[in-house]
Image 1 (cartoon, rainbow, N blue to C red):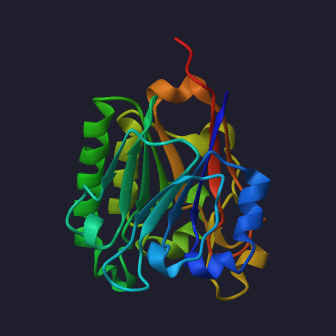
Image 2 (tube, rainbow, N blue to C red):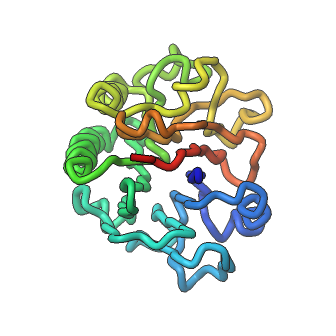
Length: 256
């Protein structure tokens, strides 16, 4: 039995609900859905997902900002909200759900901001998130996903030279992601696809999406021990409703 997981920065869950979200969920039918930038709390959202009895919400304290959610068909054994710096909690940026075979961590990584005003904070975040993930991995394998706000390599964005040292493509942010993959985590999409022009985010300006001038900043990463279970990893650029598109993986059941 395989497990399908999908991650999507929806840029406002109330907004995307009016743009075909429920039809998308019905069509793709994932077992676990991880959303970032929900910009709401559960009391503000009339969400009918009867096939997903387990709803995990981690909203930011600031109204209409940030936040993450997980909807699952399977009951988690345990859930951690936050766990990475104080902002992980106050900005609703991390949910870690423990399941039988692995942890699923949903993360919305902070943006370094225009002028790199938040780069120092971002570097602390990257360091603490890495520690958090490795600590959980001592117990069982980890799947982490979300908007990581970094294009790892030049192949991962349309205009690498003009964007060098812009937020999401600084040497520091790229090095932090390199440390992740050098220390036992797999960038699942690149296991299957080494082609350029594979993006998950496009600016709303300059007709960027129609021209496919984008960035790949949304990921699924898995502990190396899960590689044999990784059946598929994919991007769904045709799915509209946000400036990001969904990404996903399929994991086969581990048989001892």
